[in-house]
Image (cartoon, rainbow, N blue to C red; front, side, top):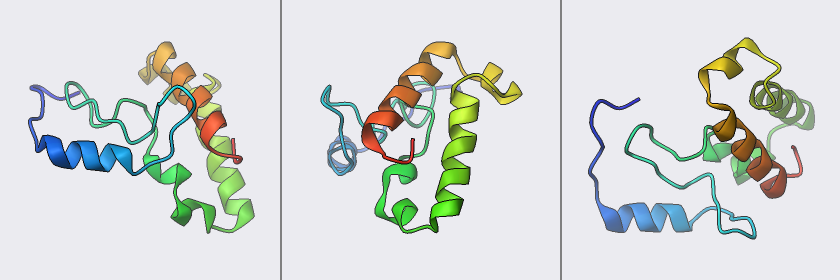
Length: 100
């Protein structure tokens, strides 16, 4: 967590957030938090990017499986992320990417 909130360029933040895919509720992995962490959701926006989609299928499946394993609470690392954040992030990933 950040000791103090990050203050940045609001125009850049708005532009950056507008670039990613959104679900029907308007949520995106590109949404900033900047109060306690960099992003609102606990997963990199790169997992729903063209770069990730261009990875070999087996590698994509392994990465997605590992992320899903943590976010679903089946891994010790899950204890470091509040359950609400894990649940919402996994729900969003499932709506944004066929890999989840």
